[in-house]
Length: 377
Ligand SMILES: CC(C)(COP(=O)(O)OP(=O)(O)OC[C@H]1O[C@@H](n2cnc3c(N)ncnc32)[C@H](O)[C@@H]1OP(=O)(O)O)[C@@H](O)C(=O)NCCC(=O)NCCS
Image: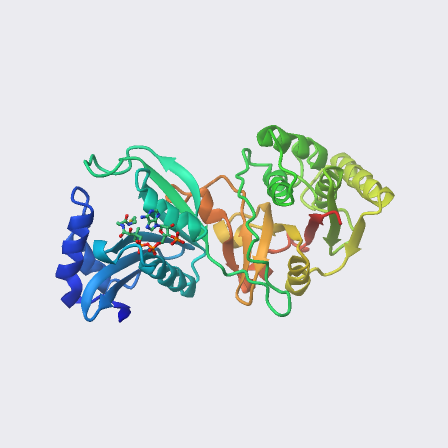
């Protein structure tokens, strides 16, 4: 009778023995295992067969990130090949899911075909090959495959409020400080089956089409109408939601002549959208509306103010990928990542709904802009 329980000190010797037998050159130390028992940012479970340890796993969590790391997963040789490894992995995933992790990541030696098969079958994807990752060893390759799984937090709710499980919006990082809008649109295009061969060139093309900057005036990039126009031209179904009929983002522009040019650019985009039957809703687009759109399979480009995240009042386009009762999940194309962050941590970034409500909208008048995109039926 197999039993999965949190590890305690009485299990330590058996775990260390099994670890050393499995990875003679690169075993996790007893001290580390002891630390995992005590840590509240680690899940360390053992599988017992009549009180004897036959397997274990360790998942590490880091505060303030949505990434969980499967650090160890081992089964005693005589118990392999019976589906118990799969069971351990499922348990680890469930625990990570309980902690609101969005991704589970692990590193496997490229030579470890069995483990790779186990992870791939469980829905992991290879995201990176890292050379010379493990120390020199006689038993396994030094190169590691980084495998990652998006945990199933997005099952379609009864009220359709949450994105579908298979929703996996790819991540793209903007390559300039003013192309957050184009990068967000490129992620959506990729997701809706219209990927771009040369993304960095297309990023600039979209920016040229959609920008409302005039002679370094106003906000730093694309407007909603211009982005909607670029999305429409590239074959997506599009709707614009803005909370005002006024010209957007010109409050901070001092010169009248520049103001006027920016208004004309915006008007030209609006005229184009009208000519092509693209809806421009002047409404207070909020969380309820965006959840309904997500439920209908759409993605939403939203202009947020970054003030609530980094103290700088800059308008910033992000792509909203999913929502639930607690969070709005965004792909944030920002390239200004902190050294310990990776693009993965900006993918499905959970923003508490209260924070999102404060951040959605820009300027003293809190002008809201969203571009709702989807597949053409
Ligand atoms: C990896 C490990 C945990 C798998 O445990 P297991 O109980 O043998 O695996 P399961 O019986 O649950 O099988 C799960 C999947 O692994 C793969 N697998 C297991 N044994 C395999 C074998 N001999 N050949 C090829 N694939 C195999 C299969 O994909 C299998 O899925 P399937 O049954 O649907 O085909 C176990 O082999 C182990 O402890 N290995 C040493 C430590 C290690 O490499 N850990 C992973 C990296 S840290």
